[in-house]
Amino acid sequence: AQTVTQSQPEMSVQEAETVTLSCTYDTSESNYYLFWYKQPPSRQMILVIRQEAYKQQNATENRFSVNFQKAAKSFSLKISDSQLGDTAMYFCAFMKQGGSEKLVFGKGTKLTVNP
Amino acid sequence: GAVVSQHPSRVICKSGTSVKIECRSLDFQATTMFWYRQFPKKSLMLMATSNEGSKATYEQGVEKDKFLINHASLTLSTLTVTSAHPEDSSFYICSAPLAGGPFFGPGTRLTVL
Image 1 (cartoon, rainbow over the protein chains, first blue to last red):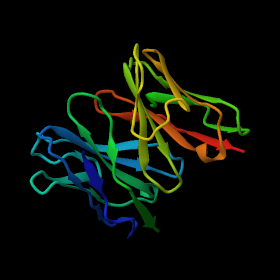
Image 2: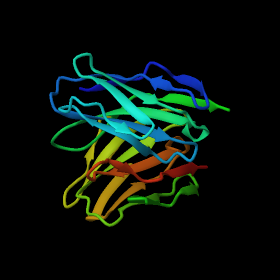
Image 3: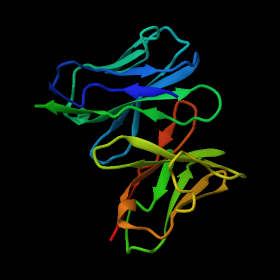
Image 4: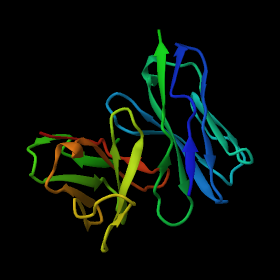
C-alpha cells in the first residue's frame, strides 16, 4: 500500500517570501502521479500542481513549483512570492497510474502567510 | 470554472433520518467518482469508489449499508447516509477524474443532531 507523509503540520511565511512544503511517499509502483492540493477555509479542494512520475522535469504553475526526487521518493512544493491568499491547508497526494484514480493523501500542512 | 458540483452544501438532520448528497460532473462524463470524508483539521479519507453501471467499491471499515452509493448516470453519483447518527457528522467531498485532475466538488457539511 502507498503512504504519503507530510512532516510539517504547520508553517508560516511572510508575505512576498518563499516557502517550501515537504512531502515524502512510499510505493513500489513505477508509474504514478503526485499532486499538491490547496484547501482554503472554504474547504474547496483546489488542484495546485500535478507531476507525472515518468517526467524528469519538475512541474511549475506560476508561483508554484515542485522538486520531484523520484529515487528519494520526495515531492516538495515551493511557493514563491507568497500571498495572503495562499493561506490554506496543503495536501500532498499520490495516485497510481492505470486502474482507478483514487488518491492517497498526506495529513496536510497548514500554511499561514503573514502580512 | 467548477467542473464538479455537490448538493447540498450543508445539511442538518435529526438522528435516525437519512440524507442524500449529490455529486455531479459538469460538462463531462465520469464513469467513476470517489467519495471522501474529512473530519475537522484532518486529511481526506477515501470512503468508496462509485462505478456507473455496477456496485460501488467500499474501503475497508466503511459500512456499505450505512453509506449507500448509487451512480445513477454518467454525470451523477449519490451518497445516502442512512439512519444518521451524530458520529456521522462530517464533511463529505466527492471527486471525479478528468484530464489534468482529479477534481473535487465543494463538499457537503453534514450535521446530525
